[in-house]
Length: 455
Image (cartoon, rainbow, N blue to C red):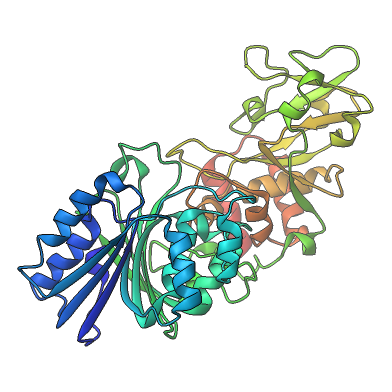
């Protein structure tokens, strides 16, 4: 993280470390100054740390540099968000030239006192980590540099759209480092999503972005590429998803002129499965019985097949059909389903299956549980060829690879699927008709069909 900072010819350095802990990040920064990799006539360190118990160790860490370089420092306890907002309100010329952050990760409740405080500073966000970065950015001098290690969750999804807008409008993204594997760099933690290191430069025109990747925490296999910004944030993307391409080559999806349609263009929708089981617990049944309809969970899907009922799973196989549950049910038909969650390090993020109405006999309605995403036409089934064509497209290697460039967590949200580009309805139906003729498909034959489509 410290190595990402570059000298800007400034005489003075005013460094912010919010959530400083015992001072590890600031120490790494100061070590670079000692060996003249960064050069300043004087350095002022402002460290915030909520936990008073580690203040003595933090103080010792910073004090150890006072005889080695020209440095002064201040340590603040208390709430960083509250103090930062006060600084912004009453001292807008905070003027930090550098910030190095390992911010806390915790959701901000809608009723939390942090919400109105952040809004007071013009910041709308849902997690402490993005709040810390936004506040630091607000307090930076022009051309000030921020390096932060963050969960990748802010790169996509609707909840972090205001935060993405905030940083893109106020800073240039200069460098992104992606840890390819959660198992290596974060093997001691239960990390459910990828982490990135981000270098931002405030009030600076956006240019090319350096992207580096590594699998381990020693960076022994570091790979570096430079990309134009339009590969990081697509110009046509109103949601401003932040993509992290891991090779200089453009993906098949990026290059294909035939893949340019939205779901609205195709005439279909994707939604989260409407049955939230804990809210309808009294209506769930272990197995089908009179007065019930099938209920599908991700556990009912194996590869491209559906097994229902499945007696040996912990989940119920049926749900009562009555006045209370009726509005949560869909008519039996062909649907394309995508699981919302994949397990850590699973080979694929996007796994699509087709619901076949014949699986359930003559039942009129189906329950689709909340851990599934459902492609449908106004809450009704799709034409069979369209449902199968969607599944073929979504199960291609290129789609999965492209999805990973904007999503670093194990969750696939309906919003993510809405933001993707698709082949035309006609082309998807053609893929589905091929699938119906083909019978058993392999990954190779599925990928070949996409190649034929985009050739």
